[in-house]
Image (cartoon, rainbow, N blue to C red; front, side, top):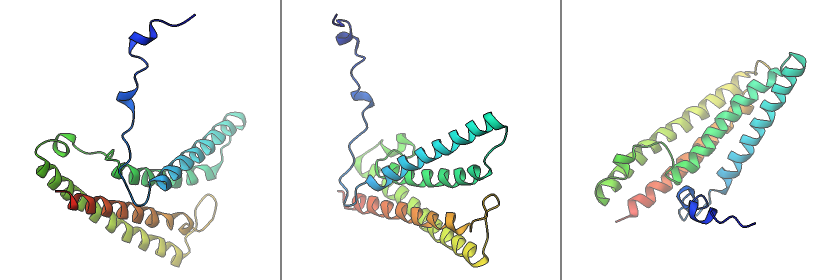
Length: 176
């Protein structure tokens, strides 16, 4: 039996919820997207395994918290990179999207420059932190592995965000 009322209900119109198309880029956002998906999947599996073990045995895997914290940081940085490019990051849309095109361009250049400087500084600081952890031989409390195994990826991901922001600024600078 056909569903006659579905056509006029408007429930099938998902165009309001469709994500905007990615801007044209030299390096597609595929890397960040896959890293985000895989990290979220690994985080969900680790957390689910810990919940099941804790429920069945009243014990927990001590290592899951350590790895989950690392994965949450990776998830935040990888998703932030694609959010900046897609203009889906946290911003005040009244200021960012309002006013004349020249005002929006100036605002985008200012916000992009501040963000670029922040992430460039963060890349340097995270690199120094990873190097210090390597030089001092710090180990993680639960697993006992060197902490630089975790922290060496943070300056790399921060550098990816820095490069993405540099590309955004270059495109914004070239706009009329």
